[in-house]
Image (cartoon, rainbow, N blue to C red; front, side):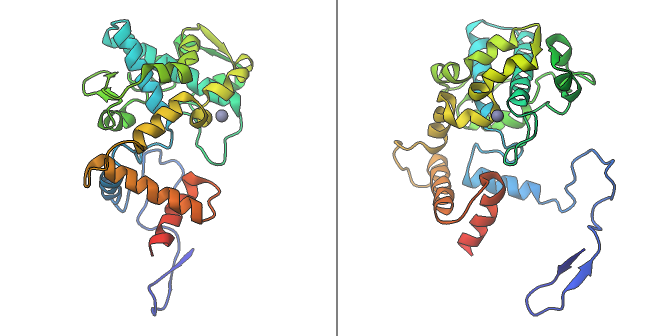
Length: 269
Ligand SMILES: [Zn+2]
């Protein structure tokens, strides 16, 4: 039960959100207030290339790496899809091995929930796990690429097209240095969760910021050395990130993913 009402008004008590169907069995997203389109527009205006659909930065690098690999090996679309899905399964398995209990500050890697039974059993058979459909880690042939694709093209990581192709700002060397080991795991027939623990510090979704792919992504988003063309999308993105960094420096922020939006509001009010 919550009290609502503006300043000077008598608060009214509301029992539960009447604008959303009750029940835990509703699996689809709930957007009863229809604000998500407006939020996405603001994000596109203020931090173009950042997505509101996922908190995971490391998939930008993973999809870039897949694009580079597919381009280098001249892969067909089905072969590129399989490589991408196998790499995402490997990322999910390594991330689960790194912390079997969910972290406070970062949701699990994509597909971990769907793979939970296999991960807890200790063995993931790649050909079963990567097959799109009811029994695999994902329903889509392109794995979890879709929520990232627009942002990856906007940032120049990928070129536009029906499959991931290298964009003008892809730096294959940084991606291989950071995430290259994942392709070797993706090529395995079977992943044993216990054997994956040593890879966690290098390949987990939670450690991208400490590795070359994270430095590349940070540089790409912030462009610290670029000329400040007033009004350009990259200048706007840099200024927004500077504002957020300033907020973090001046406000107590324990988990950036959970706290920063509230801090931004209080800092600008
Ligand atoms: Zn981790």
